[in-house]
Length: 120
Image 1 (tube, one colour):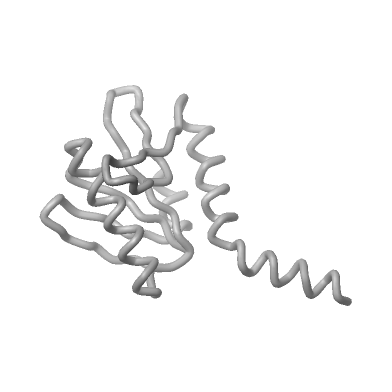
Image 2 (image 1 turned 135 degrees about the vertical axis):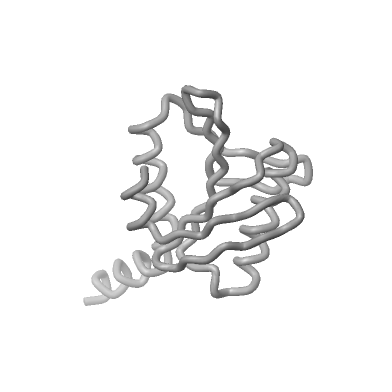
């Protein structure tokens, strides 16, 4: 019983990591190279991709943006990277949230994982 409780707690706490790993696996299937991006301000974006047509994609993955600390961390990192890479659109993949976040650097589209899979 203790083991089952430990496993369920551990899985619950790592859902964001599981979501990120799933996205990574799907990106690896579609794109030849899949990297992370570290900004000059030491902010990290989960995925930086350059596709066959030299289009750049910046993607953050988080279970939810409901927590204000998480929201700031994810959006600031992505906006910084967008500015450095001269990209006007970024993407945050979540478990089930959807919105558009506008900033001076551009637009971040927040979409749930199930919609992202459909457009991938």
